[in-house]
Length: 463
Image 1: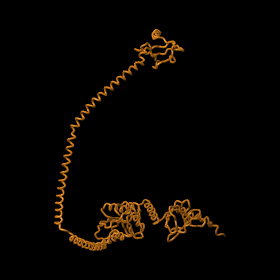
Image 2 (image 1 turned 180 degrees about the vertical axis):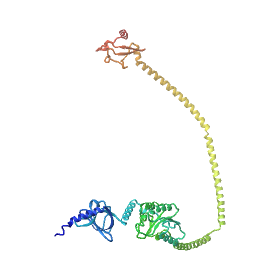
Image 3 (image 1 turned 60 degrees about the vertical axis):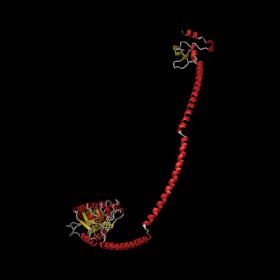
Image 4 (image 1 turned 180 degrees about the horizontal axis):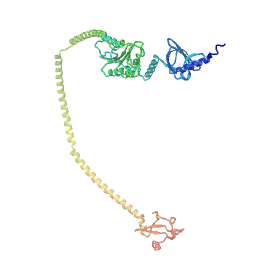
């Protein structure tokens, strides 16, 4: 008897298929996080890798149509977060996840956001050295933006108490991590900017990337960059780097180092001042000795003012005498020149010149009158001669003998019959007026001179 007749028997393919269907029905879309390993990228463009943690691992596949949308370059050892469909590869019976989304997990996501913001702000020029402002050499008042309970504040205050105890410090408390930290830090920076401080210290102690994330936020970075007061950023330990370190005017690796960079060493300053004072004292003593020697030399060369006064009096008397002699000679010369000029003036009196001018004027008037009379007589003779000539050639005499000037209707003179037309209107200019007439007949003659008639005949003909 065959013992398998009453038992259901499945082939391996059937078993794997049923297992795949069961798994896919049980698990819909899942999110799984783990470390990448055995990452492979064949020519097909699909990705095959293993996702593992400390206790287990699972095979994964991500086909080309899905991995094209991934914004990261996956490598072994990365912590990633994937979303996918749980399934089973029937050919090998391998339990697997068919992924359709992948992104960095944990600090990977934060690191990616950190790098993206760093590139963005650098492109805007917020990291440029030209924007950095120098800190005051000897500040009087500094504002500290930090947690009031953190060890960073105590370290800073201890350094300042030791190095520069006269410094005025204003602590503006704020949360430095957690959901409320962003708003509080922004308010604290705004409050610090309204104080009359020489510089602002933004600081906190060390921690993980998540702990320090407040100082990698874009809003906080832009607030630091926009501050009109120099800001020193001291976030975490030496290995910790925050975005505020790049936009601040100065980055310090630790809060204690920041405190030392922001104030001078008081003891060192006192020593320097004491040394400079001693040096200045030596210089001043040397200068005083040199000036005393110069004064002694000048005293030896100094002459009594009375001798200078006597010499001046003698020079004054001598000059007075010379001036008196010179003035007398000048006066005599001036008087002589005055007499000569007076005589010349009498000889050239204007009254004599005026008499001579009047006589010359009378002569010129008489000559002018004679010349004008002669010119007028000559002009009258010329005018009379021209009048006779004009009268001789005047057409009025011709008109007086019975002749007339004939004009056409345009006013032009007619000297022949070429422009005469029957019915045209003509005007005859006589001696004492004009006559308008109409042409009734035009007769042309070959010898016009043979037909000239007397004026009486023309008048009779017109009648």
